Length: 368
Image 1 (spheres, rainbow, N blue to C red):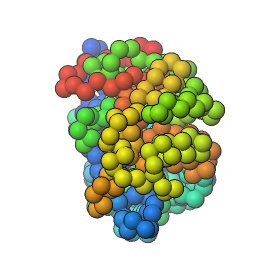
Image 2: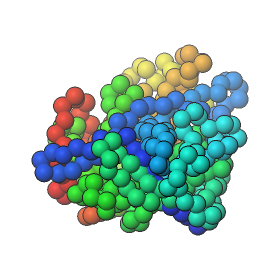
Image 3: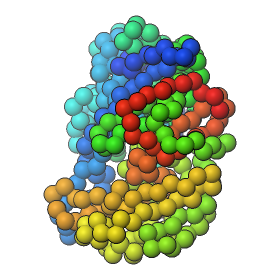
Image 4: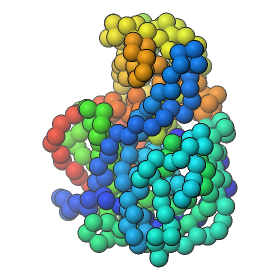
């Protein structure tokens, strides 16, 4: 998800189960990721009578002196840690998922700034309210990030909390920058890999796993947004990309301008809500091809249109138009699963390449 506006923020200290690794004279933090099923943010078509789920990739942070384990989504579209507090309401005013709530009363290193935090996301219809706090982040080997800044929410329109890892220069609130300042990594930067089973992945702070991508990384001199050239639908319809693009692992969808969404929907024969008989998707082996200037990436239609869990034979398109995202285009999980993504905060360079699924690992320090 992508932050639209924030009003008054604060500090929190956390504890994480990331594994510190020493390799080739570099220092890295490696978080193992798990796919977690969460409710869809919106019910797309009442006529189909479904309330489906979608996937977020999560890791566990151990927060505060009690080292409480708290599950959070990894989000490359935002830049702060936000977790629900006791009694908080998550999506549709429901209770937040078990294991995703932080209890400040269990930590004797917790400090509440008492500054209210209000943020809106996308077009402004989605929001989070709470307080800015600070506490310590601890690691398995005894290392820590002291008095890390984050938010504890009392109400959120999201499914659970998240760890925002997008570029930020804030030394107290950026997990990547704070890890470098604490001496836990040599360079401020991250890499993201999602595995072939759709269930696992790795998030690395301070390094790049060169075994996990094909060919060479394509680089963009940017801290987030970049300009692509075009998308080509499965039937060969080439449509220019007129707006810049961001890569957002916290979004289960692809967000494009309306003309691009309409072209894809029309091609596969989906209705206005993006619902289509799966046979239309499973036959033809079509891709959405994104020409991003420095590199071209194919996204299979089968990754964009997924079967509805309680309506076999019907698929739903993970697509939304930019009216829902504050007029910005974002490449969410259907795209992120096709690439290996890395970002160097020190040089403000973004890199990605086609993903290579392998059990091999070759983690090196940032060189670009």
